[in-house]
Length: 248
Image (cartoon, rainbow, N blue to C red; front, side, top):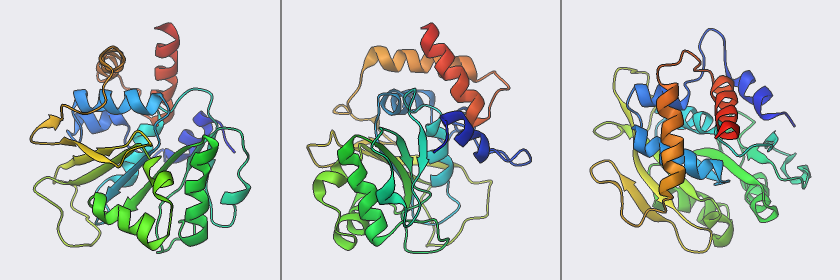
C-alpha cells in the first residue's frame, strides 16, 4: 500500500513522464468541459475503467491521468495476481494495471479479476483499463467470459473509451504519435441500472448525463488555472488539486 502521492511519483519517469489530464487537454484528447465532468465524478468516488482496442492509443495514460483527482485520504493499492483477495478492508483506491489474459504477469484475469470486482462490494474505488472499444466488448470480457455478476460490473460507474480520431485501425500497437487521440464514448451507471451512453464527440455530454453544475464549475476553474502552469507531473497536479480543494 502506498500513499496517493508516492504511487503517482513512481509513475513519472523523469525522462518520459506520464501525461497528466492537463497535458491531455493541451493535445485535445479531452476538452475542458469533459475534463471537468470526469474530475467531478472521480473526486466523488466514481470507479472507472478506460478502454481501447489496440495498444498505444492512450487507455493507460488516461487511467493514470484521472488518478490525480481520486478522493482525498484514499490510499492507493495495486491489485496483483494472487494478492487481490488479501487486500485490506480499509477503503482504498484499488488499481489494476490491466484486465487481460495476456502478459505481463501483473494483469488480472479469471479468479483474480473476479476478486478485483468483488472489492467494490466493500466500498473500494476500482480503477483499471482493458482492451475493448465499446460497451458490448467490455461486457463480454468481464461478465460473459469471467462471470463477474452484473451488479459488480454496474458498480464501475464510468467506462471511458479512447480511439484515434477517425476510428481505430485493426488490433495492433499504435506507434504513430502524430494522430490525435480522443475520448469517443463514455458510458455511465449509478450502480443500479445498466450502463448508458452519456458522451460522444459529435454531441458532447448528452442530456441525461449525471451532472452537478456547481461541482463541475469548480473543477473547470481548477483545470483552467493549471493549464498555464509548468507543474504537470501527476503528483504535482494532485498536490495542487488537494490544496485548491481545501482552499475552496
